[in-house]
Length: 296
Length: 296
Image (cartoon, rainbow over the protein chains, first blue to last red):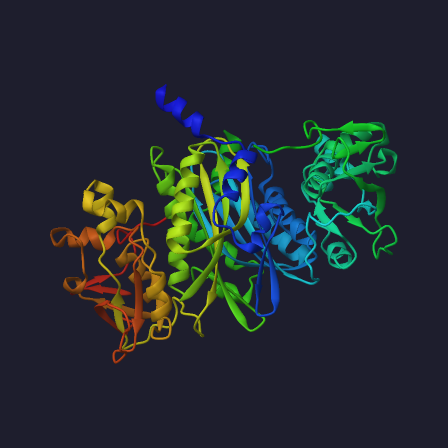
C-alpha cells in the first residue's frame, strides 16, 4: 500500500502535467505549449507539427472498429493542422500491435487516400493491456503569421464552420450522422483558405463551449456567444450539441468587416474581458467545468 | 470466444504489420520504411524525423524509475537521429498520465538539458492499464546524402563506436555500468562527424549481431564479423554482449581507405552475398533468430 500511495502522490492531472512541461527547456516554436501545433522555421519555410495520442477507454471503446480508430487518429491530427492553415505533408504512426491490426491498416489506408496524405514512418511496439496509438502529422504553413489560438481581439466576430452535434448524434446511433462520429472530415481546405483572414483559429474537438472558453481565457477577453446563432444538428438539444466533442469544425475569430472566403456562421463577438471568459446568451460561464470534454 | 478468435486472427506481428504499411501511400522520404528516420526536404534543407514508442513490460519493467524511462525515450530517439548525422532540433512527447509523472518530468528535463534539445510540444492522455509513451524527434541533416541503412558496399569496412554489453551488465546490476542501461548516451557528436565518411549507418539498439544481419540483408551483401575485434564489456561473455540491446552505439560501414574522424573499432568487412547475411568467425548465420532483441 505504501508503494501505491507513493505512485498516486506523484501522478499529475493534465493541467498539472502541462504546467510542469512549460518549465522544461522549450523550443520557441512550441509557443509556450499554448497551441495545438509546434512550428519549425527552416530554409525560409515553416513546418507545422502536431502530435496526438489515442488511448483505449479514453478515446475509443474496446469494441470500436479499429478501422474507424485509425481514421480518427489521422483526422484528428490533420484537423489541428487545418486550424493552422497548413498543407499536410505526411504522418508518422506509433502503433501498439495486438488488436485488429488488419482493420487498423484498412482505416489508415482509407484516411490517407481520402485526405491526400502519405505515411512518413513510425514505430510499432508489442504492448500489453489497453491499446495506445500515437501520430505525428507534419504540414507546411501557407500563411504567415501562422494562425494561433492567440490573436483574438476585442471587436472581432466569432465564427464556426459547419454544424456541431453531428458526432454526438452519430455516436448515439443516428444513421445519417454515423460517419460524423466514425469518419470525421478535418476542414483542411477551409483552414488553408481561411488562414489569411483570421485573427485566431483552432479546431473544436473537445466541445464548442469549452474551446470558446479556452480561447477567450488565453486571449484575456470574453467571448459573447449567441446560442441561437450556433448551427446545431438537433435544435432541441442545443446545449448538449455545444458541449459534445469530436466534431472537428473550425472555430475562429476575424475582424468584423472581414469578407470570409468560406461558409461559416457568426456565433458571437469578442468583447473586453468581463467577469467570465464566456457569456452564453446572458449567462456568465466562469468555470470550464461542464462545457466540454476535459482530458485527464 | 468467437470474437476473441476473430481478434487473434486479425492481429499481425511486427514484420507483417510493417509489410502492410509498405503497401500504403508512402512519402518518398519514408525510404520504403527501410530506415529508422524519415526525411522531409523543404526550403533547401532536409529534416530528419524519428518516432519511437516505449511500452511498459516490453521496453521497461513496471517498477522502473520513470525518470530513467523518460531519459531513455529521449536518448533512443536521438540515437536514431545521430545515425543519420542529424543535428537535433526538438522533440514532441506523447505521454500517458498516471504513474510517477513527476519523476518522468525530472528525467525528461535532465535528458533535454544533457543533450541540448528542446521540447516542441506533444499530447497527454489519461490511459488505463500499462503505460505507453511516444516521442517524435526532429533534426536537421548536416550531410547529403543523409546516411542510411542502405549503402554498404562490398569491400567496405564494418565499424562500431564504443563498447557493447555495458547496458547488459548495467541491467544485471554492475554498478559501473548502471548508467549505460539507465541513462544511455546517444552518439550525437560522433554521428555528425561521421556522416560525410560512412557508406551506411544505424544505431545498434537491438543488439549488434541482429543489426549487422539486418543491414547486410537490406544491402544484399554479407557482413563478415571478426568476433574478437568487437569491443565488449565482458570478454568472458562476448556472445551475450553481441546479442544484447540497449547500447546505442553506432554501426557503420565505410570504404576501407577512409580516414575516420572518431574512434571506432573495425569489426569486419563487407563481402559479396554468400549463403548467409552474416558470418561470425567462420559460422554462417542464416536466420536472425537469437541474434538480438526482436520486437513484436
